Length: 230
Image (cartoon, rainbow, N blue to C red; front, side, top):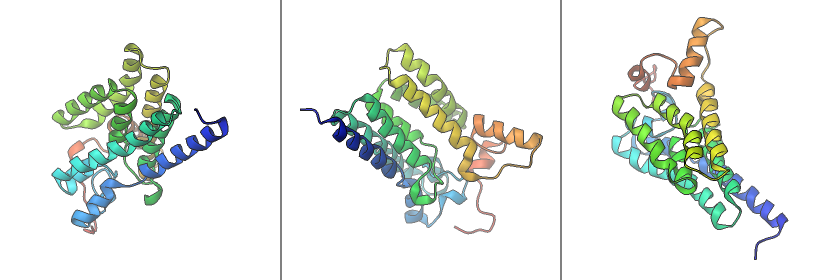
């Protein structure tokens, strides 16, 4: 028998809050500390994700980091369905995990971009979206600059969901993924913008479309702390 309305509200709240806290586990940061003692926030783009682990910690380590990030987002979405709370609650729980990954409580809200988490949510709620997004990310990786292709995957994902007849929840959920990504790119872990003027405008546009502050992708991802600290 389905639980009462009050119980469903409690279960939904617990699932969403639990998803955020689970998402806040900073996998890439922990792996960087365990393997090399490095704080990945001080390297490259400064994001707490698999790309900085690949560039500055250990290339092999990106696999367990990516799998954990996918799993931590897939689990709350899957639980929402298993508990009979419906697709909307499952999507909200999955997106709460992405928010936790991007703005983790345990790292003072300096996190990653959530791409692995998006893949985990899609795998549970919209399996057709998983290969769509993964294929565009793979193209970007092969071309040596995944950021614009990641954006392309998220821009087209709601259209793809609508075209293949995804549930009425999936299309807006995919749109929410895009909004979370744009917000995180602009916020950039509170990295300051240049003073008002043309350069600030250029940096804002680069953040939105290229997910970085300078033109060169390679220079951006290979940056190291100026003081030589870990």
